[in-house]
Length: 603
Image: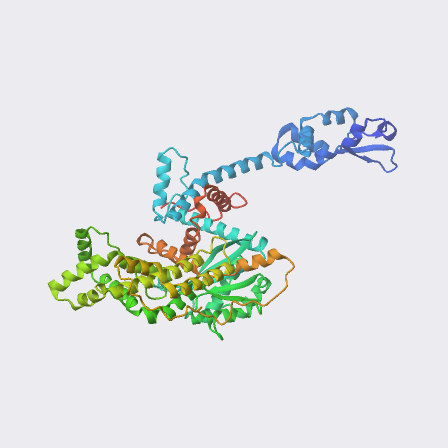
């Protein structure tokens, strides 16, 4: 059947109002004497959206004059169309007066927003569980408590598996924000690594913790990025550590990259080369596996950043090593006494109970002497000396009773030192030195307050000046003890030692270069990792995570929990915490409104 049509002559069309001419596209016959076709410009542009979002006459009118156009050229019909509901809605869309979504899309968007709002309380609760180190089974109980208090809590994902899924999403969002900052806001970054023997005892394999240090707008920040499992490697040596650290940094910089322990090192080096210009420093403790001059981990990393990598031996560890080298020959008696007293009470619950009874009778609060030997920062030694000073009278009372009751030779050995005034003065003199050294070590460990490697170097210089002055007139604790016992005539001989820095082969020296932008120089200096104390604190967090309630955690879950636990101070700020919850909820729902992880079935 032939389609009906009606044309109008061009001569008559020329007298039509401009409103019609501007709103329609017109088609002419071959000799341009008649107008045979007309289509509404606005309706043709937005026809698809009207068809998806509306129905009935509105769609028919827009389709007739917009999508297909009409061959029935009648001025009255065209003017009627311009006043129709369908055309007016298209004009509103064109002018931006209607939302860009169709009704179905708007409905789906509302559903997605409602789903995100329903997920947020669950994400917020999962963050609370991870921050407070609660067992995952407490997640469902906390949600039930919220529901009992009148909160609207969805029943989906309300189990321990849902809690794990939310914690993983939170950790992914944290890592993504750090990654974006490294890629977009900073020019340089450095990394720090340290191994964990605690994780080896708990999890039966060695773990390595990786941190990065960045500086944005002259404000340094340290972030944990990975907890490396060395389980898949045969042994923990420099080659395997090199391979593992390359994989760790690549997985951080390129999140979609997949590697394994069998990926050739040459391939990993080629992949990380585009980022090598940003890597300006590496920090570690002084273990041979890290600082070996020929086959150490940081020596191998020079292949990635040839001539640019600044290798820094942790200042806090160097102070600890230097203090041992300088002080052990002169204070060996005090150091051995602290070790003996620690193991004496640690290995005997009966002795600990007897000391507590003696302290109760004397009305003195007894303090346990902590472990001070081994690879520990100097502050542990200071704590041990303070505990010894607090318990001095209690120990004399306890060991005297023990010697009279059991004729114990160990008690006699302890009493010889405890009754010696010279030993007491030696302890106070040792306390003076360790107090200053410990203050410097703690100041260097607090690298989150905006300090740099230059500030750490100044701290060490000030410490050397204090120790030099002490050689001349003694320390405050020593002088106080002499005055208290009216023994000013008993002066200990000034110690003939020099507090020398534990050298690292000059790895911290930099080549002189000329920089045109001073801020870049400042950022570079602030990025240098002068202390590994933050990594040690990460391991302390891991010990708190691996509790009796969480004895069967997998490696990936420990990594996620550690990523959140190392940011406890940041999450005290409600705005930061809520921003993370919002982003994690959106990430969990996915860009298309569906969960990335799928539905977690309730058990």
